[in-house]
Image (cartoon, rainbow, N blue to C red; front, side, top):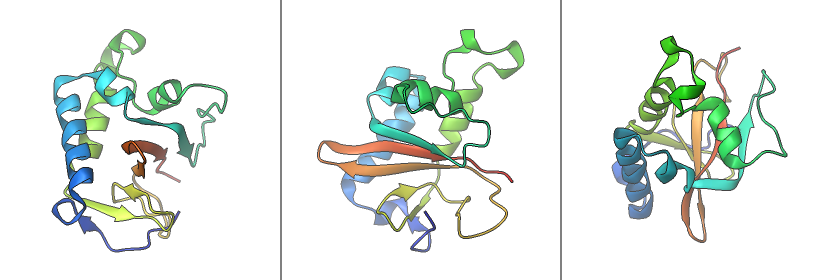
Length: 140
């Protein structure tokens, strides 16, 4: 999953990806979980899953929610809106990196460098458009 390219500016990516990221930013701003959930890939993954939060039998929404919990009723008071804050930060960047397998991911956590200080959110183009493909956990 190492990066194959230097960071790519969002404006240098294809128009459909720019529109996809714009839709995720709007969803994050409006805290519209359904708008995010419909853009999850059916084979959504979590990599570097040290805590064992990825459940291959669970739905993409359930697995995504282990990293980005949008439902404040499921969070302690001090973590209210934490999922939204993290997601908003992930999709707000100006640069992305292309993985060898074609995914475009948020930069900062390239697996070809140690330590892996930041997590990455990765996206893939499917026949029906771009989808949130997975989350690569950061940390050592």
